[in-house]
Length: 248
Image 1 (cartoon, rainbow, N blue to C red):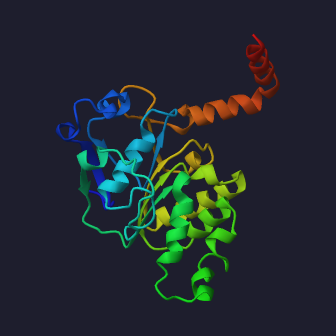
Image 2 (image 1 turned 135 degrees about the horizontal axis):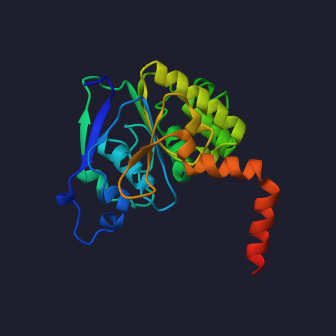
């Protein structure tokens, strides 16, 4: 057994309704038992392949609020959490995380609002100092997410669903550095992403949802890398072909 907070997981399909859409997602249906061998694990795949569904389910199974935040956050603006979280069998390590956080790009505004509610009498000056001296709502979406995440320095479990949606390439590089350093100090990350920048973090393991079951793949085998490389190297040809195809 390694020292990761989450060692492995599987799905107990007896806890999923027979007519559930979850049974129609090939990567989940054929997943088997998923082992985590590194402190950083990426889930990659096309939209609709189940990576965000599994990421959310892991977060819920680990006690996080379905819309994001720390394990202490309890709120819901729209209940669309799937039943998969209740069906996951999670094998935990002997260590317990000191901190934890579940980030969902689409609901971070709600998390930022709750951060204000949960400051428990802390003065605004002291509270905002955590985030660069300003309220999270006084910053752009990308600025507020990065400032919020950078306030977490403790060893912990961090689950993220497409964090790059809020970030410019430059801020993705800042997140790249933060994740790398925190993982080196013992934090564990489970991240669904399309970002070729984040996927390049050294030593991370990558699982692809593009197929039957979850399959490990290399950085160079991901669609994010391959399409980005192709577009950069053959930009004019690809743009010409795309525009010609659109005119047909």
